Length: 230
Image (cartoon, rainbow, N blue to C red; front, side, top):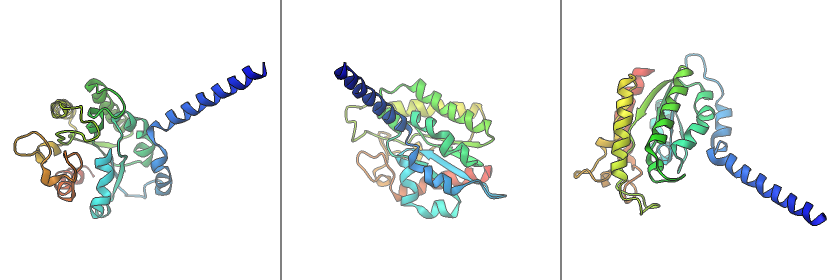
């Protein structure tokens, strides 16, 4: 009997440990302190939050003045997919009460960071974030998935560009149908033969993450749209 009790306790501990790991799937802790310190917007403050993955995560570190000078809040987490964005969307976007949210998505979904890629589900996650934002009277800017000729951490995926084009076309059509601003980073950062990110704009090979020059192009496309919505 004692052995069975010990075994049951051990199994319960394993189960609880597994649940705790799953609970961290969204990585709410990453910005919990910063969100608390930020507090509610001051009177007249028109916040803009950028939601995304490592591309968004690396942006304020590479080009800090862009965020500082334009009162932008970065909420990117490296490696995350749209499933994880949706889980933390309330904590890292809605609760900050922004005037505008900029959503970039897709790269890690297509790289299968959290499981097999399913365009319908990724597309649905984007729509769910838009609907949540709009319900809370937050304006949305949708941005294209950036070109990526391959993924160094997933070399077996060789059709990424086709999947990126398909997802971009679908989200762009949705944005146009619902009068949501859409910023096309993809074509602005494409190489000459249309197979990957322009290597002059990337800080890795194959190009997935922009360098400072790449971010500067993204800023030139995004900032005018932000200013119109503020």
